[in-house]
Amino acid sequence: MDPGELERQIGEALRKLPPRSAPPTLLPRVLTAVGALPWYQRSWFAWPRSARLLSAAAAVVVAVVGASFVPAGVEWASTAPSVAVLATADRVAVALPSGVHRWIEVGYGAQVVWRTVLAPFVLHAAVLAVAVGGVVALGAAALSQLARGRASA
Amino acid sequence: MTDADEFEAFVLRYADMVYATAVRLLGNEAEAEDVAQTVFLKAFERFGQLAASPAVGGWLKTVTTNACLNHLARHRRRFSLFSELASDVAGDDAPMSENDVLDSVASVSPFDVERADALERLERALASLPAHQRVPLVLFHLEGQSYQEIASALGVSLAKVKTDMHRGRLALRRQLTTAMEGNDGSR
Image (cartoon, rainbow over all chains, first blue to last red; front, side, top):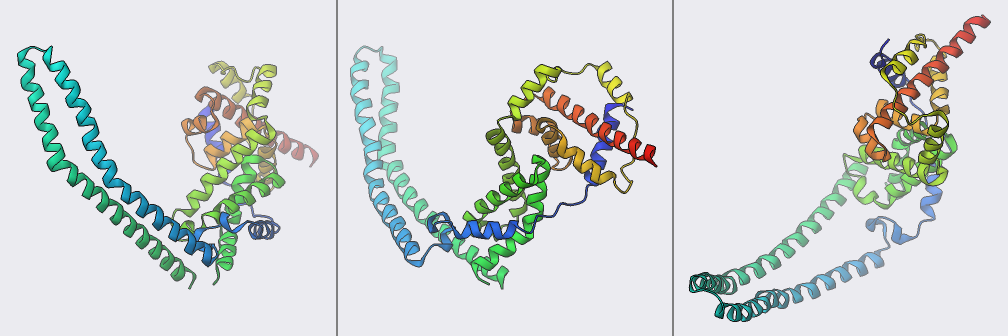
């Protein structure tokens, strides 16, 4: 008999093993351990009502504060690097041959397009994505609760 | 139905599956019960998402397997060490040559797993194997994992997994045939 045949025979034999039943002590053990868990280690839906309200309020506060920083952050990101780039480019341009100047002008043009057209769009898209994400998450949580309610009914 | 009732029904539904996986991987009933409890505690912490999920069975299997491997690695500290010590003593780590393989297989006679008490003996024989042979055999034959997946889960080479599994199969076969010959002789 080759090793492949041994593998086949042992595999067949192992798969014929009867199912093992959990001991009757397992369920009471699990339920006792679950009962001893502090509330914050349970599913969010099983938290006390006050804790759920507080955590939801905290999440809203964090989202609002975070969103208020987004415009300032995006504005800084779109202007601060460009100022540094322009200053450096000015210094370097003096020492560069004339053919390279055309490329630097193209770079200036790109900067202008970014600041006037793309940056405001990115800001609004980011705010919209956060808002849509929040709505979808709330909808998913509500649907999940609904499905659980139907499953247990 | 309250959340507590729902969770109790959930544990009752999956207890046998979780326990069976754990007891075959660990080869020890008390340790399997401990691991099963840990798995259900983890499930309880995520019960909000798990209860309605169709993939809950797969999630439980994966968590149980990982919990058993962690248990073997952390609590016994023998899974790799024991395997390395055994290899030092018995040359266990050395890959088997083709002749070794053919000799070892040829020396074992066939066994009849259909006999009434054969499955019970097989269960005992499996539990008595050292962890580095039992775990890959269970993962391969009962959990449907590939050699590569097993090697990566255990953090050992593919060659070592194959060698350990082959030796495990030979040991199982030997234990079964010896027991049956003993039974036949005593009749």
